[in-house]
Amino acid sequence: MVFKEILNQEFLKSIESEYIFDNAPINRFIKNKENGGTDEKLAELKSKIKSIKDCELKKFAKNIVFSDGNPNSQIMLVGEGPGEKEDAHGKPFVGDAGILLNKMLNAIKIKRENIYITNVVNYRPPNNRKPEISEINRYSGFLREHISIINPKILILMGSTAMESIFGQKLKISKERGKWKETIINQKTFLTILTFHPAYLLRQPDQKKFSWEDLKNIRKKIDELKIKT
Ligand code: URA
Image (cartoon, rainbow, N blue to C red):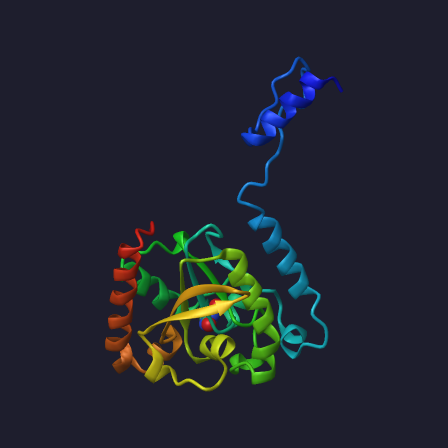
């Protein structure tokens, strides 16, 4: 390659141009990784979870339930695990708890499709039982990697299972909900809030008033951080 061509290539690399201008009729487009490799990293994580061995959850589940929403969002929400409908559709929060979650998000002017949603465990626990602590711990590595990939400005943990996955069993959600915490995951700090899970609110509607306080608190933070919702 002549010196001038090398210089041109260096220049194109330095401005991260998506196009090469030369005389060739084809191959003018250099395919850049669309969102900093997020899609590729998510696909890798999903296939890593799919290859999990000796898992009582995976054994009985129909589908992996990996995530829903916008992987480029600055808001990430974590639930517990798929129920029957989620297992059937391969998508989180599409059953009754999902209907309530959508209402909760609407109430603070968040469009569900603008945030990123996942669960602690990615396969439905048989009979919708709570995941066992060993299962929570096993999937916690995946969840932490998931959070690192999405790299949200706000992390919303819904319910005690999500809380246990990130903070262990030492906390009580009734005490800790609604407080902003700084969570370190893979050497990065994430602004995190714990709040009640919508399935719990369906069982205990008298707790909705606390949930509403948390939602308003989340909205306030979104506005402070100028996050698009
Ligand atoms: N409950 C959850 O925690 N996640 C879902 O996806 C559905 C119900």
